[in-house]
Length: 564
Figure 1 (cartoon, rainbow, N blue to C red):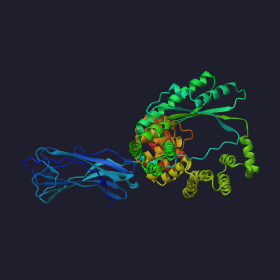
Figure 2 (figure 1 turned 45 degrees about the vertical axis):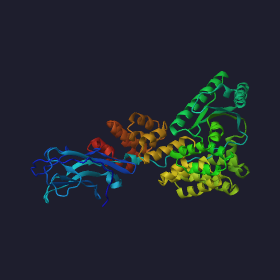
Figure 3 (figure 1 turned 90 degrees about the vertical axis):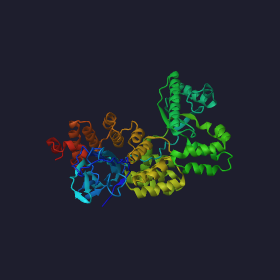
C-alpha cells in the first residue's frame, strides 16, 4: 500500500478542565474538509490540506480520535498520514490535546506522490474513535472528487532542435559592424560611443546603401547584453533597455537615410561566454580554475561565485574584464547576387560531391525526404569527420524522428569536436525527453535567449510545477505548451489568444481549448473542440469522459453525443 509524503503544521491545542459528556458525535464536511475541493497534479505530486474544527463541548475528556485521509482508486486505497487527537484527561496523551470546553482547529498539508490511478479517485476522511478503550463508530466523510491532471498534457518534446544555418558561398557578407558600450547598470547611449571608428563606419555603410542602385538584400542584427556581475533581475532589465536604446537609434538612422531594413534583435541577460574568453586571455595565474568553477556553478548561484573573484581581483575585473561586456553590437548583413537555391538543389541531385561543406550542409537541410537527409549527413560525416556541424544536424534529425539513442550518439560526437550552442541545446532536449531536468538545465544554462530556448525552459517549468515561470518563458510564443502554461496559471484571456494563434492546431490544441471552455463556463467551446478532438483522435477524446475538468458536463446529452 502506498503512503503519502507530507508536510505538517498544526497548532498545539491547550487543555481546559471542564465537565465532559464523554460522547463523540457525528462529523460532517462542515467540521472536516479538504483544500482544494478538487485535487490537482502539480509537478509530479498532489497537495491537499486536511482542515477541521472541533466544536465547543464536542471532544470527550477521555476520548481518542484518529483521522486518516484515504484516496480510493480502482486499484486500491492510498492512505495518508493519520492524525490522532486526545481528550484532556487521557492517560499518556500525545501532543494534540483538544479541550472539551473550547474545542479547537487544525490544518495539515500532505503531498501525495502521483500515480495514474489517482486521476479517477475520491478522497475520504476515515475515523477511528475510542473512549476509555471502547470503540465508538463515526461515519466516514467524502472530502473531494478526483485529481485534475491537465498539467500532464505538457509535451516535453515540443521544442524544436537547433541545426546550423549555412549560407551559399559568396552570397552573404557582413558589410558593417559597430559596438555601443554602456556604463555599468546604464542603457543611455553616450555621444562618445557614436563617434567611435566602428560606429562611424557603420553609418557610412548606411550611406553607401542609400546610393546603391543594385538593391542588395539587407538585414540588421542587434545583439545586446550585460556583464554577469549584476543580479539576474538587474541584468535582465538592463540588457532589455540597452536593446531598446540601440534599436531606437538604428531606426532613427534608417529614417534619416530613407532606408527600410528589417531589424532582428537578440538579448542576452549576461554574457558569460564573453567573460570566460576575457578571463582566459588575461594574465590571471589561476584563470583556468576560475573559468571551470564558474561553469560548474548552478546558474542561480553563478553570479555570487563571480562576486568572490571580483573581490579578490577588483581592479582587473572592474576596469578590464567586465566593461567590454556591457554592449550592443550592431551588424549589417548584405546578400549580393551569387549562387541560388535552385542551383544548389540541382547540384545536390547531380553533383553533391563537388559542393563545399557549407553549401552541402545548406543543401542537405533543404531536402524534403528525411532518409535522403540522413544519407547526406552520414556522407558528410565520413568526408569531414572533424567538423561538428553534420553530426549535430544528424542528431537534430533523429530528435525529429524520435530516435533518441541515435540522436544522443551523434550529438555527443559533435559536442566532443566543439562545444556550441546548437549541440548544447540539442543534448539538453535529449535530457529533457528522459526527464533528467537538472541535466537539461545545465545544458541550457549559458545559451543565448532564442525561441527554442524559451520553449524548452518553459516546458521544464511546467513539469516542475512553476506555472508563472513557464508563462514568463513562453512570452508571446503560440504553442500548445505556452497555452497550457497560461491555463495552469489561470491566465485565461491570454490562453485563448495563444491557442487561437497556433498555425497548425492538433488534437492537443483542441483539447486544451475544450479545457479552457470548461474553466470559463463556455459550453459551446467545450462541445465544438471536443468534437474536433474526436475526429482527429477518438481514443484521446475519450479522456474527457474521466477528466474532472469536464465533470459538470458528464451527464449532458450533448457532451456524450459529441464523444460517440
